[in-house]
Length: 156
Image (cartoon, rainbow, N blue to C red; front, side):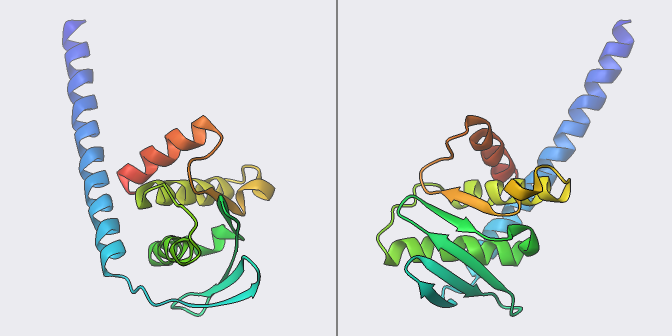
């Protein structure tokens, strides 16, 4: 019995180690993209607080800002890593020029956006997960905060 427990714990530790290595390299890749992407954005403000951001591939993202949050419409369409990084960088840029206070770090924003796109692809409450309501301080739901931080720190 002890031998089986030892084998199980060994296998579990090896799998955990491999997952942490994968997370490390994904996080490193995300940081590399965040630091190397351009800060010049092509966007138009259609009405007060409603912005249409044009990504590098020509895709258009509609984002509605208020003082405490931003709603990214149809986020599931922009699941590509460079597209998401551009959206996050634009959120920071727009908040800065409009003097909105964005307290969350990039990895936490990344985690919440990945959570939305993953849940949408799984078919879970697609009406709610298709658009992402990104709060600038923290999400009101504690479980979303926890999962967003974990996903963001892992970089997946």
